[in-house]
Length: 417
Image (cartoon, rainbow, N blue to C red; front, side, top):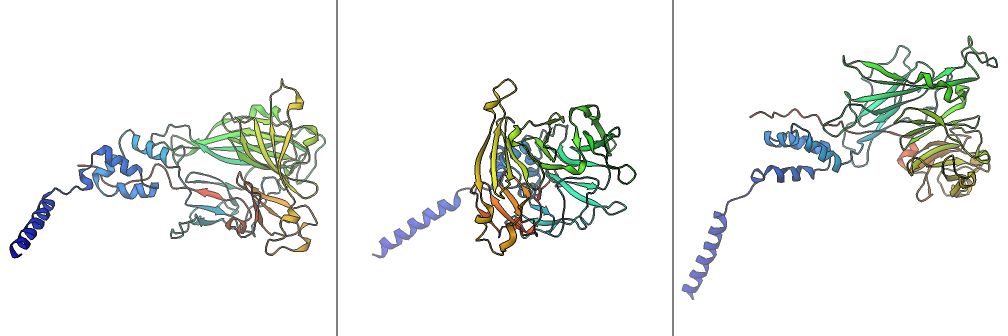
């Protein structure tokens, strides 16, 4: 028995010795191709930047000369915002900018995205103010925020990708962006004008666009102006023109004279959208928003408040000028009686829906509303048509401006030998 036990112990020891003698494989043994696959599996540009700072080899793989790796990473990982800038309920940023536009008294607050509560808050205190202190965040794209100062008669201001071909797969950054201003030119020959404050208010006018980008000297310069196209659209008073949505590469304005104006972000041309006569009303930001465009722009989806105080989701498909007009019609996809559907919401008061409710903000996913009597924000999920009061967005009186990490990521790790 003693001899057999001794042999068994020697056999086990022999197996352990052979296992210990096998070479240990580390991450350094991976080929560059396999290392790329590992790095492509990281979840965000922040994690990629940290990995690139680990050693020279990893940095060289990530920051290759032709930008191929960064393009592949960008294609696999759609950048998610680290948070949104919101204006508080007490602020009142209108959806259009006219002579009576009131700039918010305070900057928006930064709210980290879900799961990012450990991140520091972002403040705009470092951004210089104009002499009168009037400024407002009006758009965001990627890691950039567009801030409008109190100048000119502006219908809208928007950020677009730059003209330069970004080797890393990104479309916008501090060195590669465009700003589109849609401005209002009063018709100074209009004899039926409203005189106000030294003839500064007019009953009619024209919109035109101007595009700005980063100049060669690092400054901002106007690269193109579509001032010559003024005759294509004739608008009412600027106070009656309201931003109604931005989606599908188009920007929409509703006018109280029953027009809907469209800006094509590719061509930068302005046009009017022809609605059927029975579907026109005084389009205002409080009762009309465009939330999506699909089928190559031929179909639009809107949300609107009806004369009975209900909310409707409608879609309209344009079949072209040569088709029978009877083929062009609005389809009511969904309808909700807001007064009835909101009965279960906490904080609801009996008199909230004696007047028509108003639309505060709208996206493809949701529409935010409030009674017109006082600010009491609630939202509707446009997929389920369910009303909710407790959602985070209902704490802020406008849609949020998302802020994503910069692209390409900034990496300072050494790449030399």
